[in-house]
Length: 290
Image 1 (tube, rainbow, N blue to C red):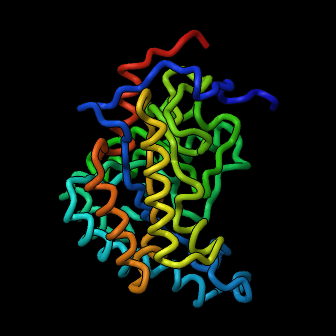
Image 2: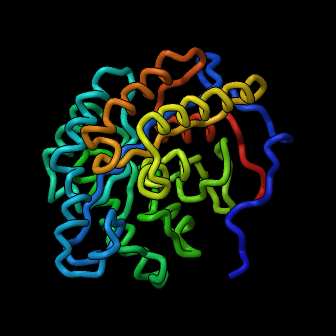
């Protein structure tokens, strides 16, 4: 299908974005809370065993997130006036209920992130995908008490029908099309794209590039400084994509804390959630005809 989900729009010619309180940058922290099925290949730190079933080395590495890493991250996030935007696999609701309880107590924003990170909907038929999406959304709604407003596909995957099916189910934005520093309307009624970081992402930086904690900290600072310099006339969005089994390893953890310190203390930053960014943009930027 050569039916693009969005139109080309150069950032230099758009209606300016004004964030609340005169802020220049809308910042959210994207915390990926995920479940990986035992025995299915997925993101791995050691490819030499990735095709084995079971694969204790790689599965255990990923499983560090819900067992240990998320709690280290929660302890640090509690220091800041910042609610997490949680990219939530619906399987987490039954398998790790203590994480859901902690998030409910902190009023996290819950973004639907598939059933788990082992199942991708990329090859589903429209009817199968509709049922799959409805189950994911309903499960998260029941467990958290909040129906998700946004969607991030596992591994940022979609079918050609995903945005329209999500709109049918009442969602208002997707994070999969990581091609901009601002939100924009998709070619689907009532559906936005909100920026999500591919490179400012602990998987890309630490697993993909083998960078160090100090490298990560400098990259975060450089990202914010550049976006801030460009935002004098129109607001930008910045996010950190964090996976607790990666960024919250003990030897890395202090660098994400230092990065958050730099962001929170920087002038002109709206500390917010992806939900609130989508809501503000939708209320202040009417879409044109589709």
